[in-house]
Length: 238
Image 1 (spheres, rainbow, N blue to C red):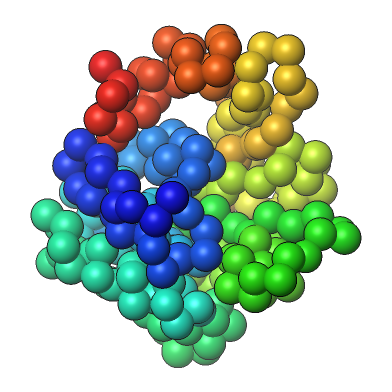
Image 2: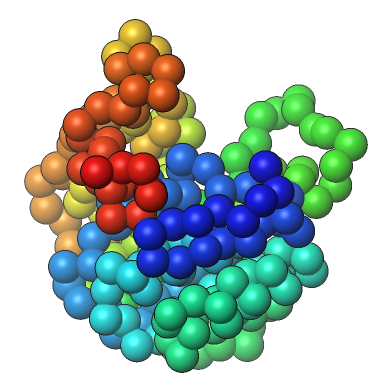
């Protein structure tokens, strides 16, 4: 798992990151809309930097800023940015979300976040992994607070969360006049339950475009929808 992860246009080292490259990050990086041509992008809780790198590949955004609190993950993210074809557009900051909110006074056209997931009673002996996995380090309220501070008037905010959290998160976002515009619900295969929800918010209320994605037909046999979404990134997807 610690080997560099080779994508079509960039490589991600992940040996020092608690949370490795996974389907969630790649899905969010591929699905997030860049049709509004964001000038600048904020990646909250960057980990390896995978989301920022994918958005750099997909967009002409001139400034992509990533925040990472964990020491090792920050250093690895900065290194992955430096080694990428877009190193002049990618910046990583070593800070907690609240520190960054206090220090930075700027609006972003796109905010992306693959937040820590959590279960109420599951902790491991690996502190770094727990920090990356659990919402203690980045509660949902902090993410929403950051979006109020940083999202430009016509900006978009894109996040992936456990499907069971979807309704609650949308309700919280509504309190600050953030409305879902697109939702993608994800299943591992057609028989499994819904696992993730990808949600794109903005300040404009419009009918929500809801779709569903099934990742595999059987183990390691991917659906056409999943291949089409990720083929610009994964080496073996055509």
